Length: 248
Image (cartoon, rainbow, N blue to C red):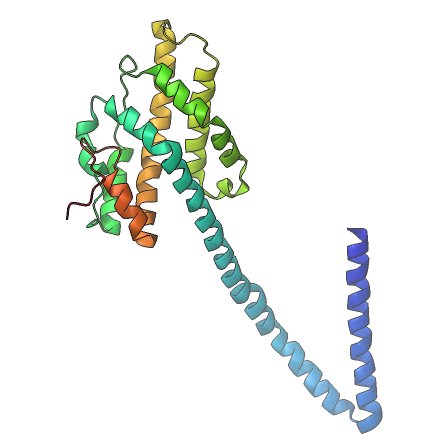
């Protein structure tokens, strides 16, 4: 770091010396200090505009492009999550949600949906109280599913690009916490009601956050990758009878 700073100082001093040298040569040849002052003041007067263009306009353009690239990478990771384990979890949780019928229509995404439709449906599910009947859930099967993908979840959490998406970061934390809860219970077939209630709360947290994130990701797919969106619609985890075959 010190060497880098010294190099910058020397480089800056060299440029200043070169500028003074050129001004001196100009004066020695033309003997016209008036001309030198005119162009020097002109250049100084233009400097704020130049700073504006470089530091604000161009910098903003580069930052916007960089953010777009980060979001693209982030959505690739989100897509991998839902393809590998997320959709399976949502299908399991929604199957045992006794009140899902109240918001099922808000989750049966269609190719005809516009941005306003996604916004309205997102608002509707935000107000919905997600519920899972813990006594119906096969906790052993759920535990095996989560442990199978535990390393995958940890790798995603370690990805620095995750910091760019608060909602999906919360999803990963909730799912990872549920994994840890189940992992640390050797016998999950004889749990007391108090412990089942605790696990039910962990499942509800993961379920609600995953659903909101999934709907947001579906909108992204529709806008950017129609072919991925088409498959996601046909394998919708909230559909009562999903059919992957293209019928129309």
